Length: 73
Length: 511
Image (cartoon, rainbow over all chains, first blue to last red; front, side, top):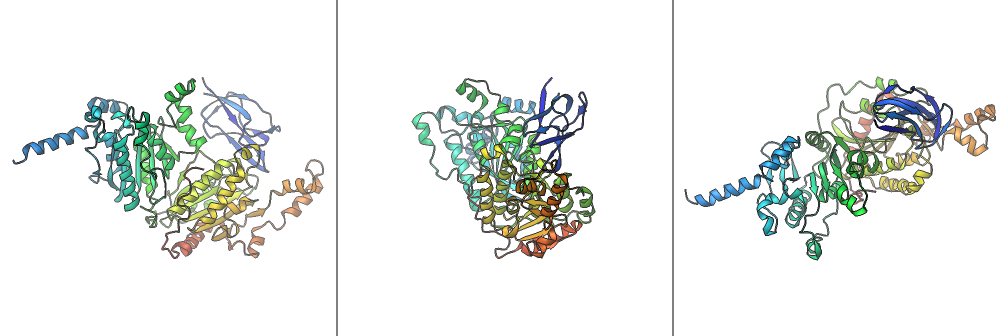
């Protein structure tokens, strides 16, 4: 079983977490929405799998490259 | 018959040369589902069009002469969809298609003819690199460097590299110099192989990590497209060539406009969100504007906040440079800068007009970009833009802030600017501006903040830009296709009959 971390691609804040731990996701599914530059920017899954761990909470600031969640596959 | 012996000998030598590395090696390739070098040429070229150059060439070394048919690289000329091309197909079954003196001469000749006679060069890559012992010692060095222009790229004609296996040495170098690089999953490209690297640095290196498709498509950006098979690579090569002229002194070919290309403008208003905070995938909008199914995105996994794509409008090739808000809100990072720069050079060198589609909040700021020399990349882009002589049409769809307003064709950096009524022009997002200019934060004094935002938001509209004649029109988004078609037609021919001045012809191939 491999684990892939999904990172934020930009600085901003975590606005919405769209999935739950254990949920099945596919590549390009929207996992979360980051607010940055007054825009709602989706964080997309880079692989198929199951949501493993969520490292953030809604409302917290997030940096470019910081992991948001892990996907088990 | 007279000359029986001579004719039999000719026939026998021919059969031997065409036998490549021998039946065992060829059978193994077939079992692994890999095309061999000659099968690749059959798949690529129009039937019966291949004119081989150097069938009877071999290694110059006596001890391997008998087992080096075509010296491991099959070269010549043929046709793709009726247009003349030059080809180099690496034969991995012969000494790993390694490079040496004779096949070096073959490459040189094919390149020279492609440039002189004006035809695309297609390199089917799979090679182990330098041949041993040929390249060893001073004698090995003495064989090299006989052509000071070996790696000079003047863009007389388009070059395509297909990476179809382990690609070291010439397959890698020519890919770096090529205009279009398509890589098959499982193929690898690097300065040295994983094995050589592991030995040299005494650390185990995974070949995929060193030079696999994912790394090249997403991180190095050296690869334009990724495919699953040789056949797909060849199909994509032909597709890419269909947008290109045969050489730099002609316009690209005109294709038929597919039925159903018109009348899709209403979709634009469905795809573009009314809420300015929402993002969208600009590629879907591009698809509704250009000829049906004519869009071919290049480097889709690299610098994703920018979309660079070939497409056709009225059957004629265009190069689309579109900010994609789906990724990073459309903010332009260093990878996106490099991607655009390469695309500007490509389109300008081969007489393909450019269409900028703008919705960007500025360059992505931050430490990461600065460490990658962002100001240098931004200025490279401006410099290249000023050297472009093909038509440049700029469509401002939504935001265009900061310096990037210029990089994306604002003002006189393009030939015509048109806006949608949703265009939003300014220095930076008003909400950030209030913070910077007045020191007022939204959560500390929301009412004053709102008032100042309103003030800074005044006069950011397309109408103000139009009244100052900085945009030549404000259009209904649904009419974008027609508008672009007319502007492209007005600028198409120019005094060079659609052929540009090619001031970017010797711009570096990687930045």
